[in-house]
Picture (cartoon, rainbow, N blue to C red):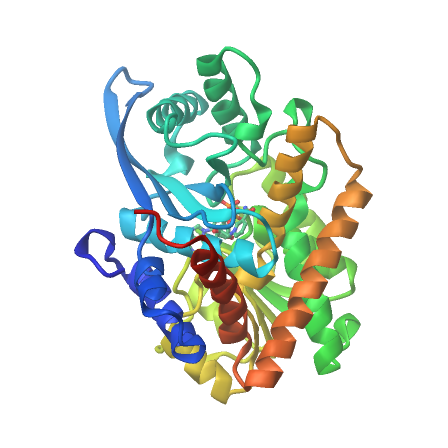
Length: 419
Ligand code: NAD
C-alpha cells in the first residue's frame, strides 16, 4: 500500500494486482489513489492469562478497507505470520470479492499473531474474548461483521458473539458469521467455502471438457476449506492423490482414502499421524502432475520461483492470495486455467452474507436453499468473469479484479467525496 505503515509482501502484492486492473480500467485517478489503501486500521494489545499463570500480550489487528457498497465484512485469522500488512491485503481482497459476487458489503479483515495449535481451550477463549472487547467499538452488525478464517472456527465465533452480546446486554447473533447453528448460524456455512470452490471447478471442467470422474486432484491445506474440497471432489469421482497441512503432505498415485483422512482429522489436530502413501513436502505437492490443484492454506505459495514447474490443468484458489503476479504471468504462458481466489473461495462470504441476512430477519433457511442460492451466485459470477476474460483477452484473475474493482470505483464516483 502506498504508505510505509501497511507495507508487507502481501500488501504489495495486493496493490500490484490492483494496479494491473487499473491499467486496463483506467480508473479516475483520485478514486484509484484512495482504493490503494484501507479506510482504517486498528492495532490492539491482547493480554491473555496463560495456563501457567503468566499474562502473555498478543498483538491483534482489524483493518477496514472500503465500505462504499455496505458494511465491512471479513474473517479473523489466527496465525503466527499475521501482521498489519497481511491483514490489510486480505481486507482489500475482501472488498473486490464482495463486489465481484454482488454482495452489498465492503471488505475488512482481522487477526491475531499467535499459533492457535499451541494454545489450550482456556487460553484461546481468553485471547478471543479480550480481542473482541478491544475491537468492540470498531465492529458492529451495521458496521463491520467478522467471520472465520485460517486458525479460527465456529467455537471462536461463538465466543466473539457471546462477548459482544455480554457488553450490549442482549443477544446479538448478527455481529458475527460462521457461528454454530444453535446460536443463529446458518446451515451450510461450515462447508460453504470448500463447496463453492468445487462449484467453480465444475464450471471450469465443463468449459475445458475435463471429465471429473477420470481426473486427479492435489490439495494443500486440510482445514475447513481443504477438507471440504477433498470430500466434495471425491464425491464427484475425482481421485484425490495428495493432501497436506502444516505438518507436510502425503501422495498416493492410486488415490487417498478421503473418508478415513476426514475421520482422522475430526479427532486429531493434523494429518501427521495418518500415513497413507508417500510423504511429501508442501512445496512438492504443488508441483505434482494432476488435473486440479487447490491451494487451501497460506498466501504466496505459487511464485515466480515454482510456477514454471506446476503440472496441473486447473488451479482453483481456495486460499487467499496463493499466487503472485510473477507466477500469474508464467501460468498464463503454460495455459493453466486459474480460478482466482476472489471467485473460487467467495462461497464463504456469500453464505456469511446469507447468515447475516437470516439473523437480521430472524428467519432461517434450509441447507438446500442455502446451497442452491450459493451455486446460482457463484455460477453467474464464474460466467461473468469468463465473459470479461474472453472479451478483453485477459486471464481470469484480471477479469475478476476488473469486475470487482470497477463496481467499487463506480459506487465511489456516485457517492462523491464527503468533505
Ligand atoms: P483452517 O485453519 O481451517 O485450515 C488451514 C489449513 O492450512 C490447516 O490444514 C493447516 O494445517 C494448514 N497450514 C497452516 N500452515 C501451513 C503451512 N505453512 N503450509 C501448509 N499448510 C499449512 O483455515 P481455512 O479456513 O481452511 O482457510 C484456509 C485458506 O482459505 C486461507 O487462506 C483462508 O484465508 C482461505 N479462506 C477461508 C475461508 C473460510 O470460510 N474459512 C473463506 C475464504 C478463504
